[in-house]
Image (tube, rainbow, N blue to C red; front, top):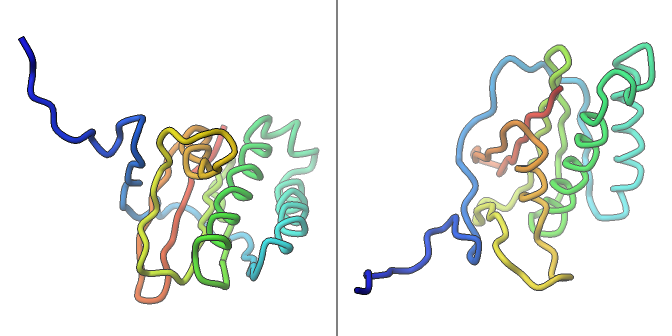
Length: 157
């Protein structure tokens, strides 16, 4: 007996799937904002983000936050790179904090596109930034305003 089959669902491993549209939790307060115009801005951004995380504690971030600091820098780098490469400049990155929890928002000016989570692709084709963010963050979502598209990720211990 055969069962009818339709097209694969959006979250099927062999297709790109959509990212949930929602606003982030409201409990976070702004810490710092970066404006990135191109990929060459990413190196300085990562260094400044690490310094900002370290400044938020009296001991090195690695000792206080463990892998959260490393994950935060990786997710920020991936989402900012996506914003620069696939959005319209400038890309605006904001770090927010609530106790030991962090919220990262990345905004670009391409209102005509929807963030997509990569499905199966050949090695080297890229496109895994949102997938990395979903695996490392507690929650990930996106929304639009009148001027920007915002992708956000919440990370914490």
